[in-house]
Structures are given as structure tokens and as C-alpha cells.
Image (cartoon, rainbow, N blue to C red):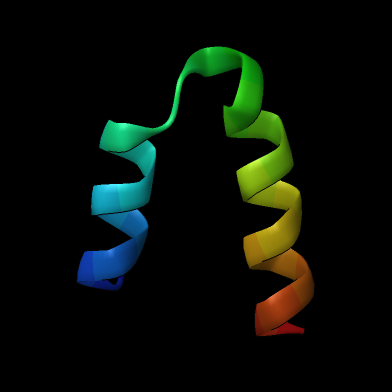
Length: 29
């Protein structure tokens, strides 16, 4: 896992977590 991912997860609320995860998956793929 990247450091940015951990930081994003920590600074992102549960509501936006799903959006962030989707964005990360989209970026990775």
C-alpha cells in the first residue's frame, strides 16, 4: 500500500471513503 493511500484513508471520513476507494481503484486500473 502506498503512503498516500493511508493518509487519504485517515483524512477521509467514512462517507467519502467509498468515493476515495473507487477513485483509487480507478486510478490503479
